[in-house]
Image (cartoon, rainbow, N blue to C red; front, top):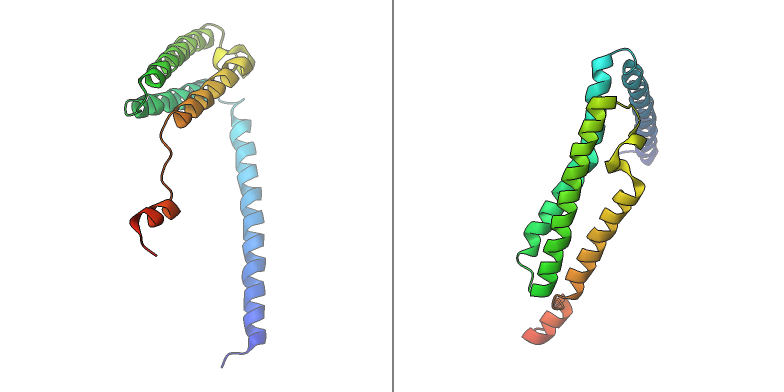
Length: 160
């Protein structure tokens, strides 16, 4: 039989060293970030690569989400909701492509290092896109038939 006191000591050691390891990991991660962002001012081409990455993130994210919703809309039951969804998604995709092209043009002509100058980081534009995603999602959810939950399935099958 193993002593319960030894189990508690082993448990305390495991928890203590896990917390200590997590804190050390966070400190090393933050130091790595400091080193990485400190290098940005010493390597000029790295700033351009980093800013291009930052410019493309919201565009890639929202275009991917809109394309996924566009694909899922094809199987929706209601035709008017499907057409409304197609209209919203097409308008949003066109807007994202236009704003992305304008942002790339702004970047290559002025090369601002701050996101305030780029259209895809405009707060109104981003909030309208998120709002439209929620609006279309709610409209599609309200226009579909109610799903049968597991309790109703059991009642209908007669299983007890």
